[in-house]
Image 1 (cartoon, rainbow, N blue to C red):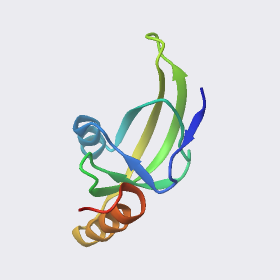
Image 2 (image 1 turned 180 degrees about the vertical axis):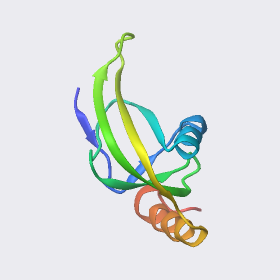
Image 3 (image 1 turned 180 degrees about the horizontal axis):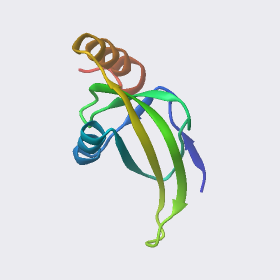
Image 4 (image 1 turned 45 degrees about the horizontal axis):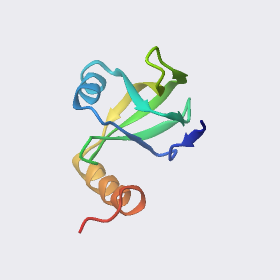
Length: 105
């Protein structure tokens, strides 16, 4: 059991539904497997499941716990600061591809 640190500039969604709720309602929640540390109070770039930069979000709450099924999970609540422009998205996506997600082949 241990905590895994997330990059302080990356908040990657695994679920299209979670991302949709954030973009539609301005607030959202993301659930990750395992204990992770998110930078509560900081603004980060949110990425879609296909690694595309979509928005700037502020991490409001990060709770790591063992759920009723006995799984280690981290719930992250965030607020939408703003959606990225097309150009910002293109640049951030390219940078994240090289820095965090691995280069495309």
